[in-house]
Image (cartoon, rainbow, N blue to C red; front, side, top):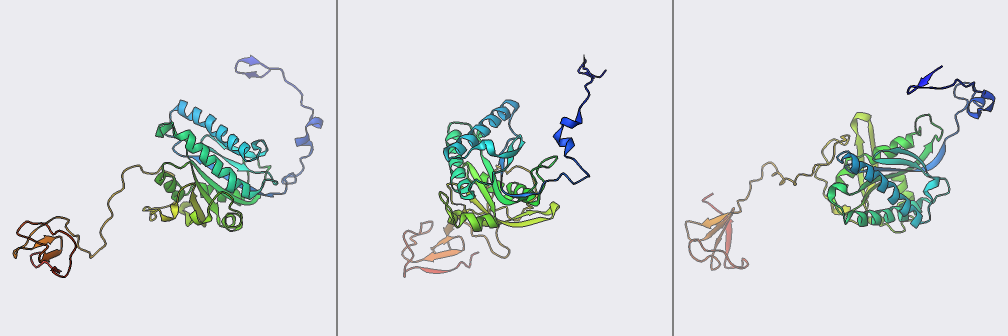
Length: 308
């Protein structure tokens, strides 16, 4: 008689005639269902691992509540979503009858609004901010350990892309940084935008070199204009899972061959004013140590400073 945690348990004979999963199983591979084309949404929470135990617990509770409330607001039932859960997010396979335009153009903007409201009264370390990736493709819903399919791999790679992480970090007031595959951008974003603006998306390249992955995608930071955002870390490898660096941005380095202009100034030997590599002579430069006042007109002569 076997024991479970010190308590004896009776042995029961399993009648396989009443077990459909065994009754329907034939040779290896015979029970595999045909894959279905579905919309996939991958969501990951920023800085989840840096939270303490209680903060993680609360974040998980609020994460699911906010998703449910946003879906209810736009007429979507989260109960019908097939999900693969993780502590800091989820991979969702949406029902066939859910309009793709409603997911991108209404559900995600509503989720972003609720996240902004939620975060407004919380310290930075307790806020919930999300990276969201959307793709579509063939997926097996009967996998033994998740959802097999290249579309699932694709949407997961997009969600974990370094440019998406950096974009979310660059806009601290937003709730959602959204990345979509090229076909979703073409077929849904540009054709049925609803509450989002296609002109706020920017094209990026998602690279995970160690996995041999390189694909184009489109990035948007909801309620922000990321088209003018300068991604100063574009040269970094895109397959790092490290969190974004919160240190202040460093001053840009000077291009090779260009001499730095000294912001300081002072009097020159002829009584003019030197400011960096520019020397000013004329009525706007009055006396040794004076300042050049006003705009430089016809009475001022600009020439390289021979003293430098």
